[in-house]
Image (cartoon, rainbow, N blue to C red; front, side):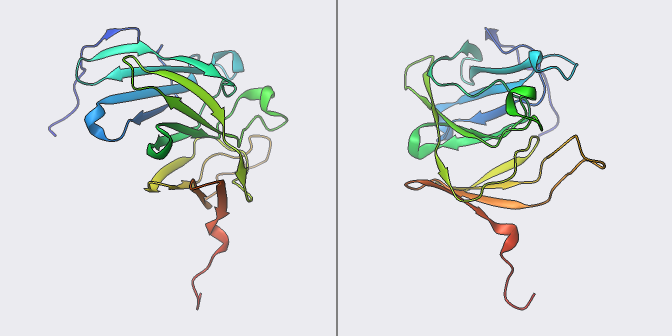
Amino acid sequence: LSGFSETPTTGTGPAPRMGHIAVLQQPQSSQLMYVIAGQTSNNCSADGFQNDVHVLDLQTRTWSVVTCAGKAPRRRYGPTGWWNAARNGVQITGGTCGAACGACGHANDTFLLRLSASKPPVGTWEPTNTRGQGPPPRDRHCSVLLKPDEVLDWGGFVDSHTVPPQWPTDVYALSLGGTAQWTDLSKRRPAGL
């Protein structure tokens, strides 16, 4: 790569935003990128938080709005997400949604957006029931798909009401096989340490 350049697109793309997630559908031959959630205003008001879903067809360079059914997650900024191939959809967790998330304003819920094979895709939101002690509610954390059925979640921003604010470095694993199970890997220490 010699650098970035703007790629012309057509269709209805997302409004300018920050704190969103962008997920490439797997296998990569599908050539679809989903953009979900984020914040579309510069103030900290939850009014600017989004839970909309847009898809960019990378072959045609065409944006579409994804029509979604089911119980959608609250509008949010700073969630993390990944492609869940076993369930043919985008999985998201965490983020902040202001006062709608309680005193700290952060979420630790997990949702799956199942997607159809149609063009453009149609989605159905489903809350994901999880077991185990998951990460504390947070935003701006990162996830990486370790295996097709396991995700690692690291760091983020936990609470703006503490002085100083908390930027944890903990690591959690979310096993997606069968019933989703959180495990705090920060508590596991190799023998001899």
